[in-house]
Length: 157
Image 1 (cartoon, one colour):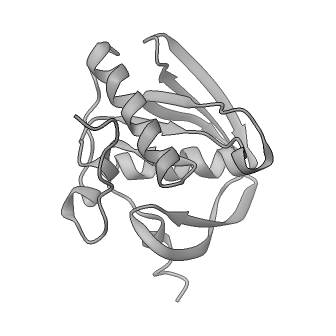
Image 2 (cartoon, rainbow, N blue to C red):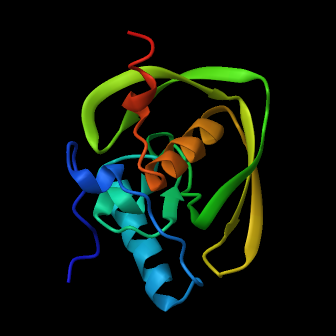
């Protein structure tokens, strides 16, 4: 069995489906997280949601460390992530997506968010994010809700 998944590409309908919460973080979910990280690093990308590997549970992984600049990996694994606070201040960043190759666009999102989630050990945790991390976690949570970053663009065109 390979230690990475195939990444699902648009217009696969699984990308528009809503992922279901996990009841707990058990060995199977931990294995999924590890395999998703391996897939993301291989791609390479900075975030990956379960929908993107054809799984419909609420699991995402992220790592913003710049390996090309010698930074050590700092993986973040989340199960059942939920935004519990967002700033009124907005920020615009260019986003891309492993499921939408070669497409990049500026997306406006809340500049800062607080997310509660279950970590890889299954413990309740919170992350306060700004900058790229804030955009990344919102982008990946969108995936779990069947929303793609390009869905934000139609209103601009």
